[in-house]
Image 1: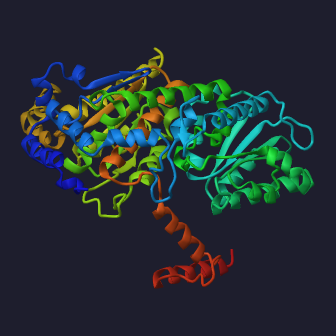
Image 2 (image 1 turned 135 degrees about the horizontal axis):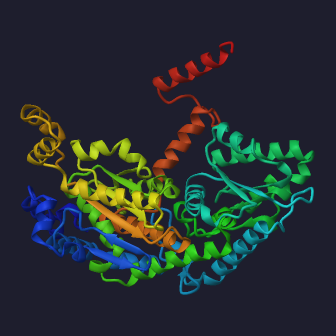
Image 3 (image 1 turned 60 degrees about the horizontal axis):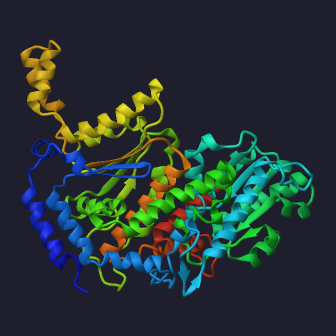
Length: 542
């Protein structure tokens, strides 16, 4: 296959980019009064406005040609058909099947029935927990669910539980523990009553050291407080493919939920990994979340690329990263409840597309995933927005804005989101700064001196994703939008978005440095020196 950067559409985009140099978004809006209508899409609950991106109709046409030249439609068909598009691990990537009732196969076998049965069991279990029908070893109803997982077994359900806090059961607490740092588990257990606490051990293989360490600590805590190791099994569920490992840990088979091999960790929120989320928001909420994602799936598979929300989002990311030189993507949810969305998207994007070789093992030849970061508005406006306005970098922004009701505080929140995107696009010239200073009664000399310091170049690209309210259905659409964006980008770059061998290296090194592998000495003199320092610090009298 021709290298991506040598293809005709890529070269055409380079020439087009060079011709657009010096074009400010102010000018693009002045030239096209219908720009918002031209560069926005609506699907169900979501409005997707990309009119503030540095693109023209020609840009979008060339980007769509790039997607077509890279056979993105073939990638969509192969993923939906259950082919093993995760080529290095020889697995399908069929998370869309988890949101559907029928129509999906893997290796020729229909998986829909198994999906429905697991979904029904998850929803039934969650409702029985919420209704106080699941009892602990001493006959008390479970009133506290603690998920023990990390990465894909934690970030998605954790983010969605916080986002949908309004759907929580008033008598049930749901917490998440991921960090092997004992402080996180300790803080959660300090608020827990063993008689009423249930742990969900979420690990596909039951080999992840952080999760197993926390699970063993939780088991010891239960045994101490319940007075019996035999009682522990009544306070655990497991979501795993390793039923033998779960049994050895003390969790009976009837309290285990299996995960399909064709679901990757960071795409697993929709599976039984979502059990704590279903406990948090209820079965109806969980099903509505899946329905929202399914609506986005159908749109992704059927809409022409020029009107396809995830494809356009992915193409804009490629344009910003590879043609405009952006190194990062700021995700700014104007919603306190969505505060963990940037953390979730960090894994989704950077673990999926943080790759340097193609599916064939050749160098990609261009930048792939940007660095994803961000926090909730309006707090970030008083922290890092200064860099957007007057810094030296192109920093694309995704504004995620649930509109909500007419409460004055909510109106202020939404107004700030819209104002930020407008100000980042428009900026402020030196003449405008001077006139503003003069209008405030500042004398001529002072105004001339201060005006250069108030200049904001503007021209910062942004997309606004707006939804009426933060409901399970709308959140499902939003997360599926980002999932499919990541796939579209990965396919165009020619990389495998579904493995993560770099993460495995870090795990191997952690085991080696920790001495849990034979010959587990440090691999370099710096780490050896740090290990000696650790020993010395621990030996100091407290």
